[in-house]
Amino acid sequence: MKAYQPKNIKEHNQHLLLSILKEERVGMTTRQLAESSGLSVVTINKLLPELIENLWITPSEVRQKTGGRRAFAYQFNASRAFILVVQFIEKKQMIDFCFSIADLHGDIVFTIEKEIEDIQNFRKMLKELKRLYPKIHKTVIGIPGVEIVGKLEISDVPFLKGVTLREIIAAEIGADVVIENDVNAAAMHYRSGSSIVGVIYFPEQFPPGGALVIGQQLFTGANQMSGEIKYLPQFDKVSFPLKVGEILMQVNAAVQAMVAMYDPNKLILFIPDRWADSVVPQSVATHLASVYADLILPEIVVETAFVQACLSGLIQIGIEWPTIDY
Image (tube, rainbow, N blue to C red; front, top):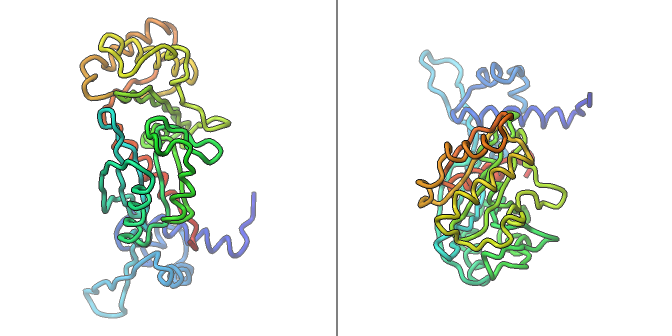
C-alpha cells in the first residue's frame, strides 16, 4: 500500500472534508464534520483555516440557545469557480449552440442558446461569458464528432471542421478545456455502480452515434473512436433523415450490433420525439429476443431528452474533483 507523505495526508483530509460538505450542501459544525469524517476535532480545526482562506468553504456563526462559546458552521462554497458547458443543439437542419454556466454543485446559474455562423462570433460569445463570469475555470464542450490530433472532425458544424477548438477556448476562457463526444456525455448521466450501460443516439437529421460506460468509466477505444457507429456497414447506403418505414429497422440493427459487441446490462436509446410511436422498448426487445433466443437481454430504455442528458453528463465531467490548490 502506498504511504501518504505529510503533504498528501493533509490534502487527502482536506479533500475528505470538502467532499462531505459538498455532498451535504448545508453548514456543518466541527463536531458534525468529525462524526462524518472520522477525523478528530483537533485535526479539523487545523485544516479549516486554509480552506477558508482559499475560499473553498464559508463559515457562518451558529446561534447558541444557552450562550457560551461561539460555534460556527462551515459550508462548501459552490460559487468559488464556475464551469462553462457548450452544447451543439440540433434544430431541424441547423445546429444551435447552447452555453450554460454551472457552479461546483452542478447547479446551472445561466444559460443561453444562440445560432452562431462563424468562428468570429463564437469567439465573441466566449469573451462575453468570461466577462460576465470571470471565475470560469473549466470549459466542457460536447461535440457531435471526435477530436483527432487536436482538430475537430464535425461534419454537422462546417465552420468548426478541422478547427483547433481547444486552443480557441483556451485563449478566450482558460487552458482547462475538456472536449467530449456528446453521446459519451449523455452516457455519463446513466453510469451506475459497476453496470455496463450502452447508449445509442439517433438524431433526426444525421447518422447515429453510440457510447459505452463500464462501471464509472467511459470506454472510448484506443483512438477515441469507439461509438462511431455511423461507420457500420449497415449505414453505408442509408440516407438521413430516415424514411418512416426505415426507422424501426435501422434502430433494431444498431441495437443488435451494440448488444452483440458489448453485452450491456442496460441500453439507453435516444430518439427524436416524432419517432416515439414507432420505437418502443417492447418492439426493440422483441427483435432482440428473436435474434438472441438463449441470452439474457439488456434492459431497454427509450428516451427523447438527449439534450438534457448530455448537459447533465457534461456537468458531471466538469465538476470531477479539482486539485486543492487551483
